[in-house]
Each structure stands twice: as C-alpha cells, then as structure tokens.
Amino acid sequence: MSINSPYTSIHDLPVTLPLFPLDGVILFPRSQLPLNIFEARYLQMVDDVIRGDRLIGLIQPQKEWNRSSVTLNEVGAVGRITHLSETGDGRYSVVLTGISRFRTVSETLSQRLYREFRVDYTEFGSDLMRISDPRFDRRELLQALLSFAKSNKMKLDWESIQSATDESLVNALSMMSPLSPSAKQRLLEAKTLSERSAILIAMVEIELIKSAAGLSALQ
Image (cartoon, rainbow, N blue to C red; front, side):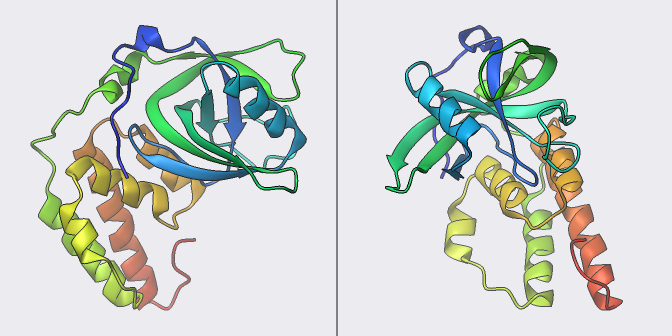
C-alpha cells in the first residue's frame, strides 16, 4: 500500500538518523514495510524513536552484518513507524512507511547500542512528491513480469497489479523481488521510475536465460 507523506521539504527531516541495517531489504517513499524487531540494540532504537519523531533509517550492509563496524551502503531510506505492537515475548512488530532516500555523510559518536549517522537528502528531494515519469513503459514491465511468472509457475494478483499506480507497482516489485542484495541496492539508487523499471526488466531477462539454461535463478 502506498500513502502520502506529511513531510513536504527535506528540511523537515532530521540530519542525524539511527540506522537499522538489513541485508536484502529496501524501502521506497510511500511504501510500507513490516518488520520484526528482536535484537536488544534495535529494541532500544525503537524505544528511543517512538518517544520522538518515529524516524528510522533503513540501509543495507555491504557484507554480512556481524560486527558494529561493518561497512554500510551509502544510500538508504528513512521511514516513519506508523504501526507498533508488542508480541508478548519481548519483540516488536512495526510497520515502516517510507519517506525519502538519503546518502550517509558520517557516523556520529553515540552511547546507544545502535549506530547513528549524519545523512543528506539533497539528491533525493523529489522523493517527497509524486512525480510522473513519461518515459516509464508500464506495458513492457508487465510483459516481463508475466514472462517471469509463467517461467516460475507463479500466480499473480492481476487485479491488484492493474489497479496499482506506476510508482506503487515499480517500487513494490523492487522491494518484494527475490533478487540479491546488490541488485536491490541498484534498484534503490535508481533515480527515476523508468530507470528502476529498466533494471528490473533486465534482471528478469537474465533470470529467464538462467532458468532456460538450467541454472539456479536469482543467485
């Protein structure tokens, strides 16, 4: 589901964000992402932000997240906690609603268990508004999706697909696709819908070739 953001300018957004690194997970403006929070440092993060602006930066690590000093990708997305519930066993179930992408600038010193970074939204200022992309070819993307679904014997909810806006369709496919973390990062960093769609189509075509050759898909 896609919803409008209450933020109208990048100056409304904080220059320092707590970052939640997740491998293979990306977020786009006006998209929603359910998350299950259970690690102590991120439980602390949720406790802290829920008392303030409810904003968390979601970002992918460049390699397996096993140390606090692991290198992160430079581009992530800030989301606002729009739903939170406690599971009864010490976990949080939250929904993040995407607001804008950002580029990290530098890590800040913090006594918290989680990491915080100064971030810059300048190059993604258009994320705060819905902008149509006349170069986006919806028919081409749907044809690629149909080919992939047939090849993998997948059932698609065509009613929902047909009713989705261009932005919702492209971003939902980018977020839900079983692509590698590096491929998802390319989708996240694409500047326009048409560029993101072209990347998706190219990746689908590569996977169809792999499938036809008997190779494991989406590796």
